[in-house]
Image 1 (spheres, rainbow, N blue to C red):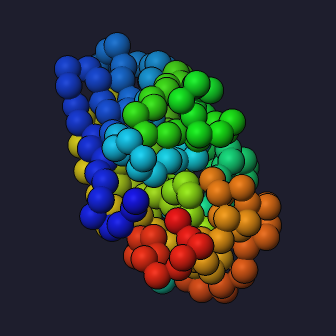
Image 2: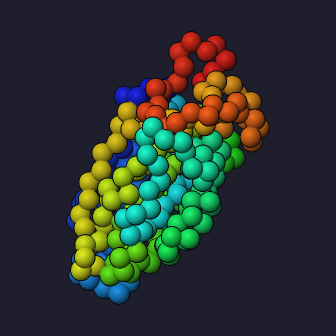
Length: 234
């Protein structure tokens, strides 16, 4: 069951390991001095309790601090709309970032496990996976980090950073920066693009049909949690 206070994500620094946990990312590097390129391990872990929420594959991207995924109270751009409604790899977000000069971006899916509720690359409670990328911290285009993932199941719930400069992983000299991020359920967003009817036919994770949701034509707002009145909902 999801409500706005029911789960948490914590990003912490331990030695040379940087982690965001819960719905999560983590980055670690073998050196702390400036270098032309370093290897970063991005880890995504779902710390929701058994029976809790899942997350779509984590989209991630490095940028110069100007790649703004969204602003509360405004309409979601098409790339974020698709990710919030359907999950997936965030391919359009990657394309948008590439158009802005980004060179390091991608998607981190979960490996198939016998405990998965259904065959999907989503992160179910307790699951963790990682991907390693090479990043030149001396380049301004790689200085900041952004992420996005869909809340599963939901019509258009998601997590992402709305401040493009919230996570500066490299300073002006290319040195890796210690970072801590804490996220609770109140930080989940409602994309405002699809009505939250939580109908199994329109909700990813509940046997939905792609594109079958009811358009909402709204704006991005904090997610209020699952309905407690819809007998057919989550």
